[in-house]
Length: 167
Ligand code: S3P
Image (cartoon, rainbow, N blue to C red; front, side):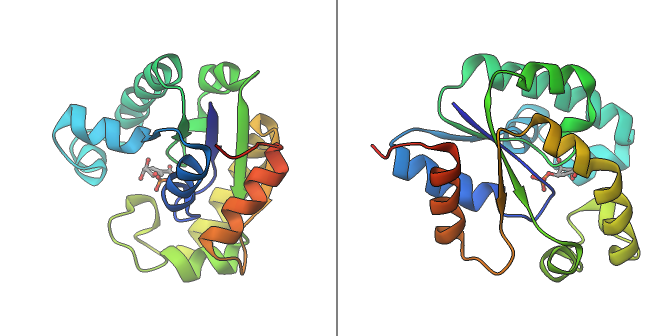
């Protein structure tokens, strides 16, 4: 199993699918699991019930996926905020896909589907990364910078960093 962590918009789903193809395994995404299980979008869950209710749903989804899945698994950007989730990640092969704040604003700044960034994206990004960077780094067995790289290049860098052989 390879777990991908990192902020929203860094390319976890795109790279995760490419990585799964190269490794000949199945790709899974905990955000997709939550949407399928809840029958509503992540944005709707945030609006209807608030962030902490979403985090509780997410925590269970991550626990289940980690137990069931054997392939590439992408976690929602905030999943690592939960201490128990971080403990579950210990001993897993975890790649942190990183990007700097300017790249983040460029990629996600105007994306209304991402409720955490709806207002003042640059400031939100700075605060978000200050709060989270050490958590991403703490769970990671490999850090893969994505700035200025294509998804294919990031995938190759992840394979190299994780020292994985292709199928
Ligand atoms: C979030 C990231 C999103 C989604 C939710 C909250 C976050 O997932 O889970 O909007 O707190 O960073 P992606 O990282 O897959 O966009």
